Length: 398
Image (cartoon, rainbow, N blue to C red; front, top):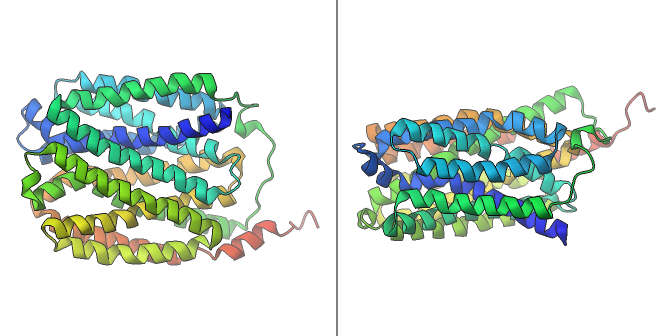
């Protein structure tokens, strides 16, 4: 029972992680007005530090998770996210906001390389476990849209940070009481090393990292830009943040189901085959969105977000299958540091790119990124070959 509650809290932590990172994007217009910034596009680059720290902080977080302990790091996550959210609410200038968002990004970097390996440690079906976890994270995005919309409209943007911050602190207190103590740090425990040929190992890691970069670019650009995209192509939403938040929440709630479906598929079929099917559909849907308006755009947004969310579980599934638990946090952290560090530039570019060329150009650029993802996925080695290589006895054993 204690582990079930711990697992629930670990999934809830994923929701909190994504919720916190997306509050700013949903409230950016209200914050720009409060700070006296002319347009939301001019304020958007100030959140770049949050996503940059979310990326580069992943490697030290993963290393500490393996060598110090995942339970301890998750406590730092819960309390750090809560404290930084309250700090954001106290800011008065754009640069104060940027620094506070960067601090929150540093704490948010803990979850993926620490929380997911902790959750997978005893998982019998990693695919469905990753699917549920991904769905929880994306429901956090949905919660960010609807809670921020209502709090901005009926309170103010500061409460949109304070409320989830207090929830994170409360979850940390419960996690501290419920989560079982670890029997030593994972990196200090004996584990069976999976032996792969160096060329195969390097190829898998390179493809996994490149896919993580393109997937993160699509994820960051869409989740941070969808609110303003809807307002641009559905003008009735400009003065209705609660309705806008509700419509975005519906998009993310429906899209999150795709991760559960993908989790089931990758437990049954080769990862490469499933991913090729999903990535091949992304480019055409982004092209359609680039030329869509009104409610047609809204329906298209549901489709492309299902495909974006559906592609997220693959890198975690590859790590779960072919990386020992003793080093999973470090491998995951290294991958996240590269992918989110690079893709944070998508957040920085969002405001200036849309201001200069419009959302149509931005969506065409995302279609090109999706085409790159397809080419990269083709380079992933066949899973059966990897598995046979990992199970083959080494020459020394022979």
